[in-house]
Amino acid sequence: MSDDSVIVAAPVAPIEINRPEKPNRGFSKRTTLLNMAAGWIAIAVSMALGHEMATLIVPLMVMLILSLAGVYQGVGHLDLRALSAVGAHVTTQPQKEEGDA
Image (cartoon, rainbow, N blue to C red; front, top):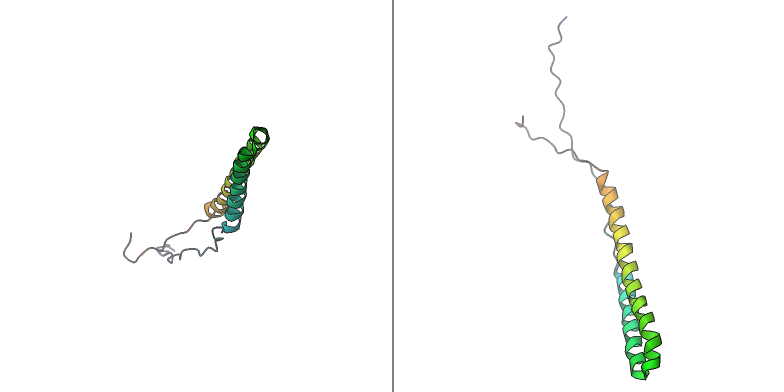
C-alpha cells in the first residue's frame, strides 16, 4: 500500500491580540510640570528675598526639579518596557494568498 496522498495545510489567520493601550500619562505629566513650575517660582522668590534665602532654597529646588524629571522619565521607561514585553512574546503568521508557493 503506497502513500501518495498530499497534505495541504489550510491558511492560518493572523492571531488577534488584545494589546494594552499606550498609557495616558496626562495626569502625571500635568502634576510633574506644576511641581516643577512651583520649584522655579520658589527659586525666583528666594532670590528676590535675599542672598541667605537663595543660598538655602536654590539647591533644594534644583534637586527637586531634577528628581521630578528623573522619576517621570523612569516611570515612562518602565511603562514602555512593559508594553514592549507584551508585544515581544506575540507572533503572527500571515495568511498565504492562493498561488503563493
